[in-house]
Image (cartoon, rainbow, N blue to C red; front, side, top):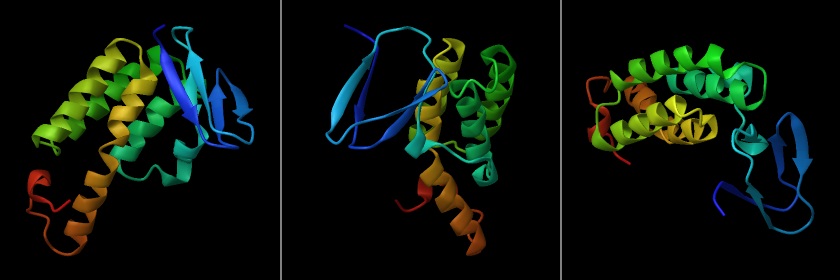
Length: 146
C-alpha cells in the first residue's frame, strides 16, 4: 500500500480535509491512501503572526493549501516564487536538496511534502538570523555551525 503514513502521538491532532481529528490515548498510525487529501499536523502549524520570516511565509502558503483555505492553483505560483527567492539565500548542498524537493512536490501537487521539505530550512534560517544579529551577516549558510 502506498500513500502517506502518519504516526500520531497520544492526543495529537491532525487536520484532514478540513476536519480536526484527535488521536486517542495511545500512539497510532494512519495510512492515508486517498491521493490529494489535505493533511496538516496541528503541532506543525504556523500561526499567521508567526509567519514573519521568508521561510515561514513560504511554509505558511503551503499550509493554507493543506488547511483548505487557499486553492492549490492560487498558491502554486506564489510557492514557486518563494522557493526561487529562498534559493538565492540558501546555496549550500543540503538546503538546495530541500528546495529541489519542495519544487518537485509543488509541481506534483504534493503540498504536504513541499511543506515538509521547506520546514527543514527553518533551523538554518534561524541560525542565519541569529548570526546577522551578532554581526556575522557575511557568513553563508553552509559555514554556519549546526
